[in-house]
Image 1 (cartoon, rainbow, N blue to C red):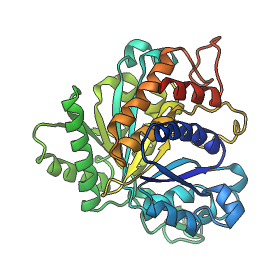
Image 2: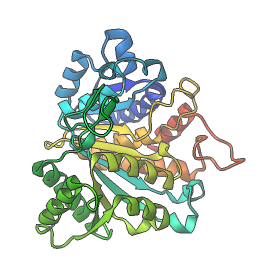
Image 3: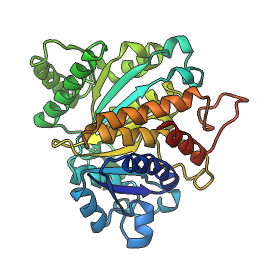
Length: 364
């Protein structure tokens, strides 16, 4: 099983290093894993003149899975958009066909006090957000700027982006959501999909709602509800445990998944998987590169370690190894170890490497 490892920028190398220690321990125990590293993001721009060099893309395309750290650095904000670090992840999503982003938001009982909400509101939280990843306003054409448009403000500059979805794009992400809900139902969850849209205002999302409803007819055992995005944002704070699987478009999913992250105590706890139609995927923590703490040993590596567990489960067909990693994370939290982002006021915290030490030790 060949894994392309792309640490990236900021805290990316630090957190990926801890996930690699976990994977290497599994390899020492007999799991057949091979790793190859490459530059990506701002690091790649500095060394190769592009955030996604051809060699990095080729490595990712040939791998069974990609383990990704983070990209982004304010030092590159003045570059033209096509050369900024963030374009690397967008390019990988497009070139690898990574259309389905799975972001579980699980509140570990030991972190109930770290959540932004009262423990009684979030205790037992277990949500899966399914975000469509290659369409919507992030990729729609036309887009850009123009200096002197026609219309009410003729002669004034303007900028524009296009929100767009095709039927096949909506159908395939809906199938992912309904199938995930079916799997979760077998494990004791509600078996409900909440499709989030803005159909009362946007034609794109009226179309989304119509297509999702059509696909639902193939899953009579799964409940479907539709919810406007503004209400969904409110309900995630008011009554988050009413959700099971949430499916939505690229932009809404980007925002709602980060909101859900804070329900779990820290975005440093949220892994993610981005899958293509063949089940190959890119696995990364949901947080960013955090350049303000890079190199200081403060970053929480658990989201990256849990992303590696998702990689073992979804792309590499190793569910037992995935469960072993997830259990190790739970055991470490039960022991009381906390990085600064999930520590309660006055509670001692450990650094990035120490948390990695603990997870490796908990693997047994």
